[in-house]
Picture 1 (cartoon, rainbow, N blue to C red):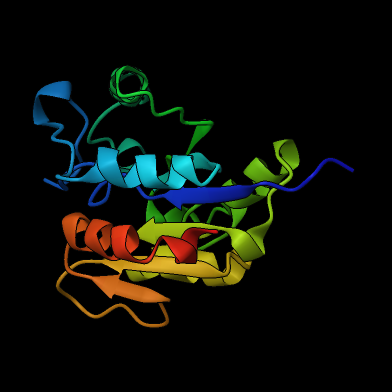
Picture 2: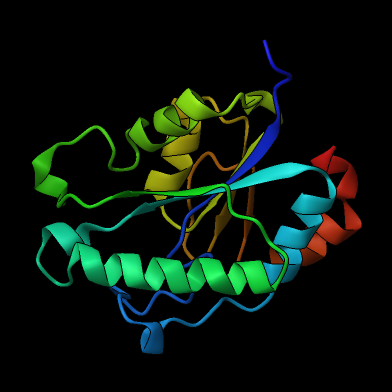
Length: 178
């Protein structure tokens, strides 16, 4: 059995980029302040990076799968230019009423990742800005979670108002990322 690796699971809208609501075009995509530096901290500690994102705008007809794929390719290229390798992007295209197994907080996206990677979930982290993100961490047995935002999100390991605030914490407490 291969050695298990640590992973960081990231929500997209609200974490990687500013959530303007159903972001589907490059012109509307703004990286969150501090996100590149935060991801570099995790990379220095040998974490694999995965994106897990609900994209119900596809299922609701707000934008197409092609729109999502174009934006996704551009975003991954931006990460590559910053020397930030993203292992894979997993997304749920379904509207909430479709009752699929991939929409957070269901564990389908993490289950897919575990099919292809040997991940130590007890050493892994998830960063999200909604209760469904933190609930995904709990249901998938990802031990550590970070909630970002002004509103209270229950059962997160840590809660910060912003990515820069989380970045400052992890810079001072790098032992948390061992």
